[in-house]
View (cartoon, rainbow, N blue to C red):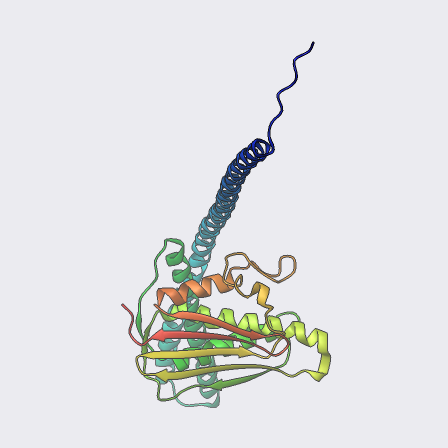
Amino acid sequence: MKPEKETMSTSELISKITELEEQIGRLKKQAESDLSKLEEEQNRADEAVNDLKVIQQQLLQQEKLASLGQLTAGIAHEIKNPLNFVNNFSELSMDFIQEIEEELDKLSDSPEKENILELLSDVKSNLLKIKHHGSRADGIVKSMLMHSRGGTGAMDLTDLNDLIREYVNLAFHGMRANKNPINVELRLELDESLPKITLNAEDFSRVILNLSKNAFDAMRDKIAAKGNSYKSILAVETRDFGDKVLIVVEDNGPGVPDEIRDKLLMPFFTTKKGTEGTGLGLSITHEIIKTHEGTLEIESELDQYTRFKITLPKTTT
């Protein structure tokens, strides 16, 4: 006879099932814990990969900036030599005119003498303008060389309102002289009680030029989209806030979408097509403002305006 199989009581079965359920629960918790650790490790790995990509991008941008600095220095050196000839020969020519005028003074008066003196006066006036603009160009070249070497230039007491007037108008006339000129109303609302503040005028002039040029480019795009129904306006304002100065540069162009506003100050980021822009204008502008211990804020509303707000201390170290 076969021995009868030992049967488990109901209570024993329940106990065994409970034990197995506990084992399954422990295994499940262990599996969930292991899975959570794997997910954490995966997240850390993803973050490390993203950090690596950011570092690689920064290295690439630094390499591009270094190459651009070398190129700028080379171009500046090449420009400086003929520029020196322009400045030196304008001075020499003014000396010659002075000598000619002195010799003419020895001659008796006559209509011919008066005509010659008038012509010499016109030539002297032209030479003074050549000398003036040649000196300005020389200052720009020196500033380019200084930046290529990492310098920041001299900080001097500067009439900010005069600087803004000069370079907004320079940007405007430069735009009008280039291809695709547009009509823009300039509104300068400058606080005339503003005292002189410490600035590197050569550097800060580029801030005004870059912001004005960007505004003109943006408004040109809106004119192309809306036609004659749109009137472009560039408004520049200064305000005295005690120990600080506020500069506001605002255009009524197409505005900046929220998704790219944070990218505007990144080197080489540009919304312009093809080779129309390098993406360096706003990046350089931001760096110049930071060297003046200032801040730059960007406000915008689509199809309404873009507003750049610069805050500068009246005295910088």
